[in-house]
Image (tube, rainbow, N blue to C red; front, side, top):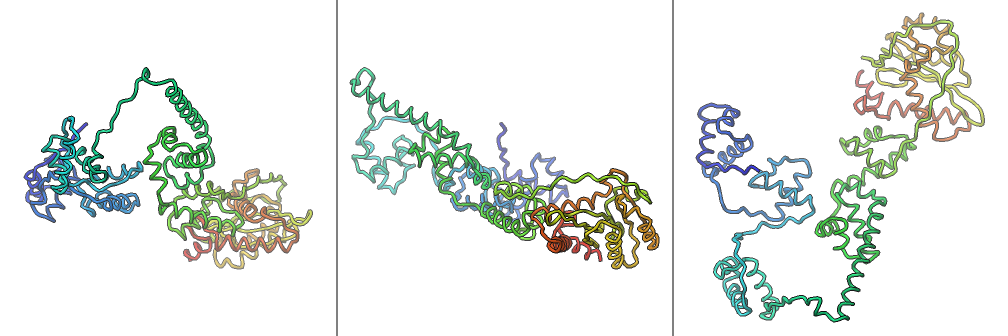
Amino acid sequence: MSTKRLYSSQFKYEALMAYQNEFLTISEVLKRYQISEYAFNKWREKFEKEGKSGLENFSTKKFYSKEVKEAAVRDFLSGEFSKEEITRRYEISSRTVLQKWINKYNSHRELKDTGKGLTLSMTKSRMTTWEERIEIAIECLENGKDYQNAAEKHKISYQQVYLWVKKYEIGGAEALTDRRGRRKEDEELSSEEKAKMEMKRLERENERLKAENAFPKKVRGNRKEAKINQVRNEAKYIAIKELHEEGNITIQLLCGIADIQRSSYYKWLKRDASEREKQNEEIIQVMKEIQDEVDGIFGYRQMKLQLDRKFGQVNHKRIARLMKFSGIQSVIRRKKYNYKYSPPQHVAENVLNREFTAEKPNEKWVTDVTEFKYGSSKKAYLSAIRDLYDGSIVSFVLGHSNNNPLVFQTFDRALAQLGEDKPLIHSDRGFQYTSNQFQRRIGDMGLIQSMSRVGRCIDNGPMESFWGTLKCEKYYLRKYHTYEELSLAISEYIHFYNHKRYQKRLNGLSPMEYRAKAA
C-alpha cells in the first residue's frame, strides 16, 4: 500500500516558480516534478491567498466541529458540489478527510467533533491501588482536568485517568473501588446454581431459534417503502423493529442475526426522511392525479414528459420504479386484427418506402380507415389523415359506413387547409384508395400517391400506430351506447392528442406546439 508523499515548502515554491517564471505549461511542471494536478492547483490557491507561508506543512491536528462535517457531507450527497469545491468551501485539509466523513455517514455512524489536544501516546498498563486512583483523580480535578499531564506523570493511559475522574465526580471515592471479581469454576457450583444456569442457557437458545425462524419471514414481506426510500438494509431494520415490539426479542440478538451494527439500527430509528424521499412521495401523488385525469393511459414515458414540466428533468428509470412500487400501471394495448386482402382497381408503388420522417409540414401524409363498435352490435368507421412531420391529425371523419364518401370527405377536409403544398399521400390497399375515383382526385390535385405492399402493415406503420394509441387510451376504457357518445369521445381525444399529448421525439412538445414552431 502506497503512503502519501510529503513535500517541503521549498519544493512547492520551486514548482510554482517554474510555472510562473520559466513559462512552462502545467503538464510540463507536473512531469518535471512528478506531482499530481490536484496537488499543484491546491498549492497555487494557497500561495495566491496566503503567500509563501501558505505552503508550510502543519503537524498539529486540525479541528472540525460536528456541524461542519455534516454540512460538508450533505453538500456532497446533494450532487451540487464537487469534492474540490467542498474542501475549499469548508477549509478541509484534503479530499481524503472528506471521503472518510462520507464513508462514516453512509455506514450510519455518527459524525463527532474532532478531538482537541489529545495525543495517542500508548502506555503499558500497570496495577494501581484504590488510594492511588483517588489521589490521581483529585490531582487531575485540581489541575483543571488536565488528563494528558496526569497520564504522563503517573505512567498510565489517558483513558484510565478520564474514567477515574468521571467516576469520582459521580460516586466519590467509593466509585473507584475495583469491583472486578472472578467467575466460579464448575466444580464450585451447587446443583441448584447449575440448574439455574442450564435453564437460562436453554431460554437464550430457544429465544435465538425463535428469532432465527421469524426474521427471514419478516424480511421477505412487502417492503415497498424500503425500495422507494432506497436506504440500505431498511428491510432488515423494519423486521428488527417489528420483531422487537411483537415478540419482545432483544435488539442485540436481532442485530446479530441480521449481521448489522446496533448503532446503525438506532441511527435508522431516529433518522428523518431525506429531501429525495419527500420528493418521491410528492411525485407519486402527482402521478396518481395525472393517471386519474387521463383514465390511466400513460406509461412511464408519457408520465416523464408530464412530470418534467412540474419537477424539471426527472430520470425515466426513477419514474418507472416509482410507478411500479405505487401500483400505477398503463392500460394494456390489445392485439391488432388481421386484415383480408381484396383485389385492387388501381395500384401505386410504395414511394414512401418506410421513410417516416419529414423535413417540413405537409410533405408526407399517411391515411387509413379503422372500425369501432358501439351499442349492442353497431359499427362506426373512422377515416383520418396524419402528417409525418409532427404526427398531428390533419383531418378526420367518423361515419356509419366504410365507403368512398367517407374517405373522400376526409381528403377534401385536408385539402381545404393545404394551401400550395403538394404532399405525398400514402395509404394501404383498401378498396377506397385503389378506386379509380380516388386516383383521379389525386391526379387532379397534382399529388403523389403511395401504397403499402400486400400484407405489409408496417409500410403504413405511423397510421396503424395512431389507431392503436387511440383505442388503447380512449376507446377500450369504456362502453359506448350511442353513436353520439362515440363521436364526442373521438373528437375530444384527437384534440387532446394534437394539443396536450406531449411527445419525447418532439422535444417534449405536443404536435401542434411543434408545428407552430416550424411556422
